[in-house]
Length: 235
Length: 385
Image (cartoon, rainbow over all chains, first blue to last red):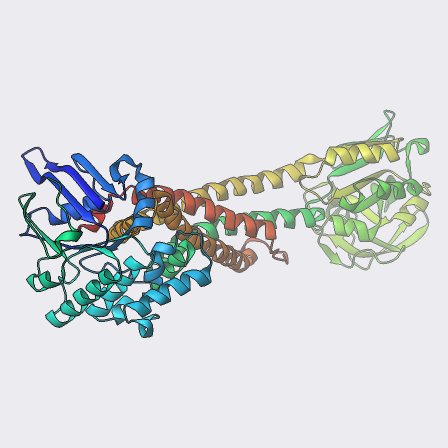
């Protein structure tokens, strides 16, 4: 049973001069618990695909089903609720809020949830502990190293216990050692049952993925599954 | 962690922007508070010192028989005893409903007397009340202290060749001229002033008064109502309001207030523009941040609430500080605007109004930036995605 299902997905960016086809009739199904790596050269449509998966960018045509919910059949505000409940984002440049501490940054997705303060604190502390940052809770992003900021970003994506994590080049701005460390962390999370879709340029990450989809010109160029029984491709 | 935490932390950790926003609104609110508290205090000053500007209610006997003019006002039947007002009845004036507004009741008895071979208008007064009422009287020498003292108007003194310390004989009695009024340019220059009991005795009008001047303490209080109330307790008297005194002064104050409000509105508008521009630039600066909020599942309403929460905090601070600064400025410039010792009132209604005004202006100026922020396309905002 696919957890994420993309059907005949098209995304065109139209301007007066020309029309750029970012995604072209893309079909993809991702199983629950999969660690999917999306790779490909710049301009192949990786980030567009992730934006559409995240409910942030309307496809030109096609459908996105997550847990059988038609993402673009929802109204804009319902999609915001969906993102809050179903998705955890890890951005390329961490995108932490500079004036909030590590703990507060992790608590961000909980800010609009009706939970007791103590409970929010507990959830955020627990997840920071999980990524190995329990000693840095009161620090501002500017006081953290790149790897630590990335861990805070991952903790923020996890705090809501979302079924799906979307990561966009999470190791893009890290050195090799830290990058490997972060990818291992993703792998550990995946082994704990977390479904993860990660866009990456980094070939070093390949061994950690269950499955790798390579895009070129908005189409799937190749789709290799390390653990074939967990992955299926919709034809 | 709630939206409030985000808003407060943003303000706390971006102090210069907070200071700029607060300053923009504070100047507007402080100007409004200064101008309102100034005009209110000055109005109160006029109300409390109304006697300084003369009487505003005149009580005369009800009569058409004879007339004698004083101060350009025709007095009825002063020559007829039956038409005089009984001095004992004057206590009733203090029983009217608006008695708290009465600042002074100055009874007078008037009549002609022969002094040094000339006919002179003699006026008997209650010295305390009369001198309280007529602050513009400047007495060279001493005012009336005893029943044997006289004060002369400037013209009378000149015409009768009177000097301070002279003995003046009236109807066989000798009086000391203790003071001479400086020129007033009014009919007060033409009179000789004695105490009320002395003049009553000399004019053979014991227990009677010819007219009463009443100073009412209020500017906007219903003088006409007080006229009616006094008429009811003194049915035999003609009671009329001299509204001109009050109206002239109040007109000037009204003009000042209107001018103040116009200035305040302009300054407030500028304050609102400062908030608007700063909020707009803050929204532009925070495009990426707002994109993150949206990506993390904040609804548009949450983003609007976040921006408005920040503006509410800014406005609240600006409202309170604006009130304090405004009152401080009033305190500093009030002595330049009035000679009287005026107490500054820390009016909680004005304070509340200042905060409300700041909140209203802050919210109005921030609403569009908030709306703009909420409409940001999260993908555009994030760019990285």
